[in-house]
Length: 282
Length: 344
Image (cartoon, rainbow over all chains, first blue to last red; front, side):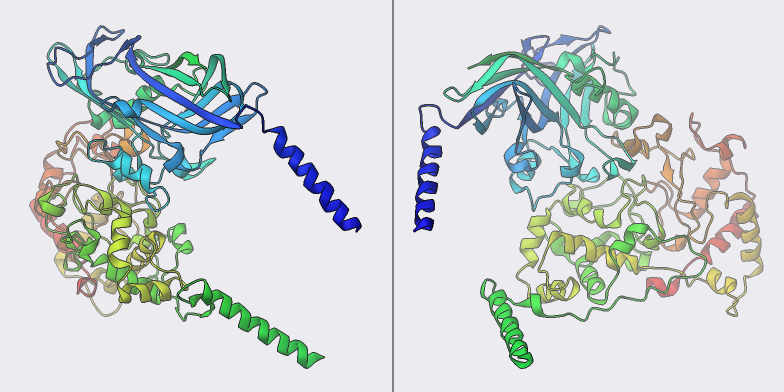
């Protein structure tokens, strides 16, 4: 008899718990990340060689440049609540938590985070690139991201490094439209904390939101700007393009890090790189 | 009581067996496979074994499976290229092309390196980008200019082949066809490709062979002018050096620097082993030289200047001076490093 009574109480209690959350506010909602790729605020229009419609930018060193291709990988997304709690979004699942932003594909410029717990968030963190432990081109574990990154019109596999390309920019610079080609990716080997060789091109980005993203009744959109003026005229490095750094052979060496630090920050006094928040729409 | 306990445990075992096979078509979990380790006959005096190899010990069926995969053209997108297409045994598992050629005649970036004595190497490829041999097989499988396939595509092609399924099960304790099994078995096979039975080895081991006069003279020249880089029983110190060879015109080429990100490593390549060098023409990172004579002529005439040119060359006017007779003798000596057993 006593047992039955206990069960009864337990049933009541669980009903109470359920009914607690059973008001108008959903327990979770979507958050949309909108990526706006610009040169100093002007939306980038891509163009082939000698294009008259491409957005042209002028670097700090006075070099005009424009892009024909612009792609980068975003992963390891975390939203931070006002109380400091971090809500990771499928950070160990590239199929559900990573995306390739491709300026030539409108649908890739927005990325929807689903079922974010109802709360107020005032900071976002994400990775430019793929963190080392997941950066193995593991098609068996993450077939969808592997396929979308490797598609013929995307080409974000870095085969010889058995990792992903983190950034791929093709374009032109200077008066005679010289070729500009920048690819970044990691070549790091060994275990975390005990790397034996190579370059880590992954960068963790931390952005404070100008106003809280209130997830619940509303499904906020966080508008993020990626200002590619930083490529040549960044916080960390001012780069002049020339024969020895505008195409892969040398930029894949020491120069790659100069570009990577500009786009993704140097991890010490710059944790935002080219990124900033335009606005939060609740 | 004792008896009934024993009976109980028998029943328990039986239940376990039944439940194992009930949620799976197979019941391999309960079978023990006899898959002995392979005796690699590690030759005396060779450098230390790559420590990663201890995590993937070559076994009878692992090696058999790896060899089958190594020779299987299904690893390429259109089933025309196997690992063995560019790593041919008669060429000490290298090939004749200056630069590797993949499916549909696509040309890669570099000369296909010989696959020999891999277990003693601390890094792989011309630029040493891979430290674990198990991480290498995926690269040619997915590279556009090589096999242009994917690991899932390969698994789908072979996972219904009974011979493969049986080999995977025997090699990896009942595990079926997996990506790891593919990588590990190919590495296990490659670890067995040890070449240490050349005339040089037999002379050194005093097995009755002796150098000819020319070979002996060549060995002296070698010790004087080549051995600072081509040392140890592998005939490479496994260091990376820029020796001013003609530069690969591809903008993708950065040599060792594309791995380390260090400008000082620009166009440095790993010192190649000289074992079986007779069988691996052409020479150089992109097959710049058709013959050993061409390589020696080039080194003797003078190499390209570079900021990071190897100090040995810098100190000698950018050359390794050799007389015609010295070149002949050196080539005679290098041919004593040919291991006929290895290529047959």
